[in-house]
Length: 247
Image (cartoon, rainbow, N blue to C red; front, top):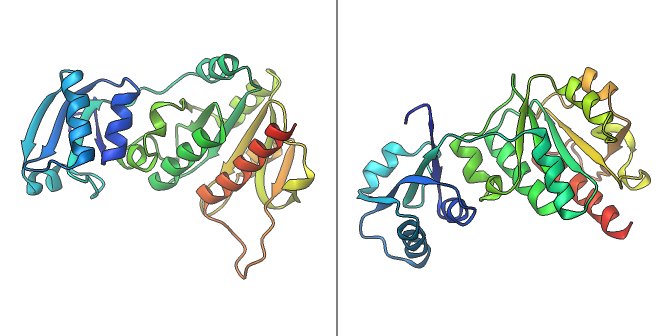
């Protein structure tokens, strides 16, 4: 794969890429596969005048970066990150107060993809990730997002702390997830808000946590004391969605 290309793997991911209007340069399909989802993909490819190449399973396995291509791999231009203004524009178009997820050092591409998917479903207007010491948009992220990456702006910034300060000047309040915080149900999470989710192992960094206005704790009754980062993002995102819906 060339540096300026991205592989999109998996049937749902490829279908959503087409439906979102993303330009697909080439489509590789398992030769002899004619089931419903694959036929849908081929129709979308024909409408978009995409070159379709029929190949063996061995060829797809060799190309695959995720190991789960499901018989289709689309080749598109490398992911084009959004700008902060794209997030505010999306909120404005929906007539809603901005709701942003900021990820402090997420390293697992499956987590990043799942969080982007959650952000889309919870009504967030965008996701912000740091440039360094964190995963970027990869083929695994694209697949794990189940197509949400095509609809939810993802912005890459040089310094997360500085970005928080910039967003505060634009009226955004910030809450981060941490066990030692206030129970999330006792916090007012309505209005313009940024939700900060930390690294899978170490959580939100001290410098970023100090810039947050609230620290939210998720109630837990089990025998272990932490949640997967993408699950924590989901729980808090939908608590924000609930409060905004009822507010």
